[in-house]
Length: 147
Length: 205
Image 1 (cartoon, each protein chain N blue to C red):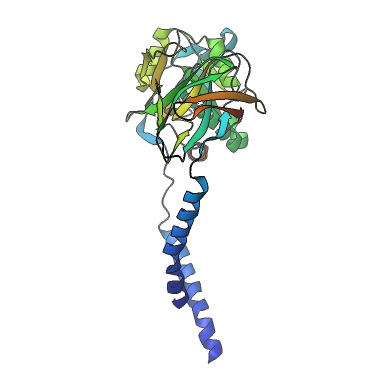
Image 2 (cartoon, rainbow over the protein chains, first blue to last red; image 1 turned 180 degrees about the vertical axis):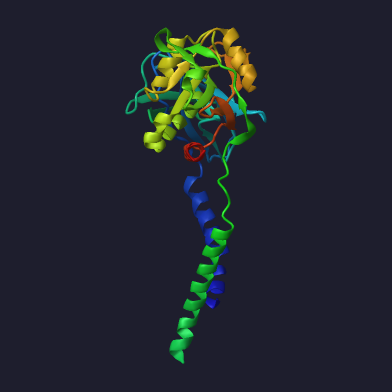
């Protein structure tokens, strides 16, 4: 019991230390991470997911997306209402606020690839350029994966 | 003296564990389905639609199999592949029992999805998955019976219109009765457990 109470005193300090270290590590960086694409067939539509991490002090926006593997690329959001009806909504621009991470993930925000010009097979990698208002253009490589 | 003291916690721990096990046994609850069950199960009127190569698929021909019905469309890049991906995991989890289940995707977009197109789309996830289409009139009949919402949506997208649709999976028992629905996002583990339970119950009957 004594040992237990002794340890508990250190928890707030430890949490603070973790927060401090994690905050320091990323300051200033704007990056796109963990990109992946879903397998799909040529002629069909595909989806790409990633995380945009904005650790800068500037609010940003994702304005457009381009790729060579499809005739168009758009940002969409899947949304479900209380009746279980799923809809997709095209997004004009996605806000990427300062000091925040915006996660593009299955069943939520995603880049929709329209009219694929090639099969996306597991093991392939596609290139995707994301155009941000402040950070400019960032090209990412997205492996085709099943997740 | 010392020996006695040090072994006391062991007795206490043993007693506590034994008690917990006993209580767990005494208060063991019956299996609770993860899906939203329909009580009593609702008989679904028979329907006949078209799958690959013009072959017909009639619900009453599936008697003896559990039928998992999902409504989607092949232009959908996000939600529909997610559900079919989950089906694929369910199929793998079920092992030999997967043969007692029909995995079906029925189009919510008959104007663009031909039977061959839906069939090929579903088969890309597993060759045994079934894709169905047919006339809008026939499909609307099924949607109405099951309370499936489908609506075209002008989106301004280069993909043309999008389709809003109920994303739940409809679970029909071996006699073609609607037993439950799984909301979008139900895990493969939960689906597989529910199916195993349905099979178990039908063996007992």
